[in-house]
Amino acid sequence: MLRIKNVGKIYSNNFKALTDINLEVADGEFLAVMGPSGSGKSTLINILGLLDNDYTGDYFLSNENYKHSDDATLSAVRGDEIGFVFQNFKLLNSYTVYENIEIPLIYSKTKTITDCKSVINEVIEQVGLSGKENSLPKELSGGQQQRVAIARAIVNNPDIIIADEPTGALDSKTSLEIMNIFTHLNETFDTTIIMVTHDKEVADFAMRTVYIRDGRLYNDEKSVVRS
Ligand SMILES: Nc1ncnc2c1ncn2[C@@H]1O[C@H](COP(=O)(O)OP(=O)(O)O)[C@@H](O)[C@H]1O
Ligand SMILES: [Mg+2]
Image 1 (tube, helix red, strand yellow):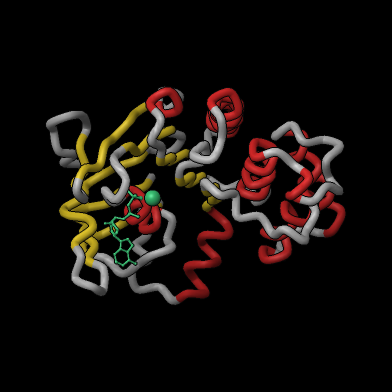
Image 2: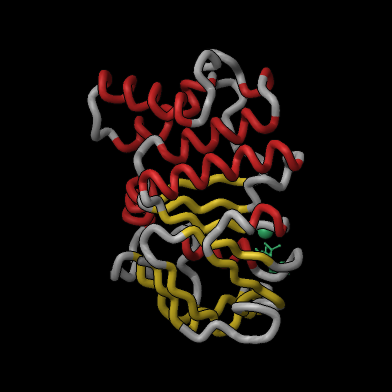
């Protein structure tokens, strides 16, 4: 479970990006976060993803507070527990599909080479990219590149996927295909998914939607999220 209590964020230029945010996300939940550009969505999920621990208030991930943890600990926890998917895919362009997906396993060092091969092939199949193992990102469509990014995000079998506008660069048909993959991961493996989106049709795949406006979190048009 993820739980944040009275979280605030002020950037170094004194800009107040988040104010008094309270939110609980249960294990296995699929949550959408919507809100206008500049409202604080990425700021919030960077905190949830342990990419930023310079905030006020408290954040507990599985009852652990990592606010004062060092970078090595944070990256180890991220590597074990969280998979990230971004709008612009963030693939390594000179690496093949297979090599991109392999990266988190190289860092985790917990599996043998044979185990790595079978788990990589398994996730490639799950995202529907069998046969594309040796392709380079530039040889793939946007939707296929996002499938690679999802495979890379799930190869370590994370408890949580954090996705920042994962369909923001995709057409609507491809967006729905990507959402079907997320839904499948959520339903099959109980993976918790926290997804920022601008697109109501995409948000409708989630179990619950919260909204951010001007750095404050709402359940709907009016009511502030209090727990
Ligand atoms: N590193 C930063 N320094 C100063 N201000 C920032 C920084 N990153 C984001 N902001 C500001 O914080 C606000 C929220 O940004 P962000 O979380 O990226 O919004 P969203 O993802 O909803 O578009 C914006 O006004 C943005 O300009
Ligand atoms: Mg953003």
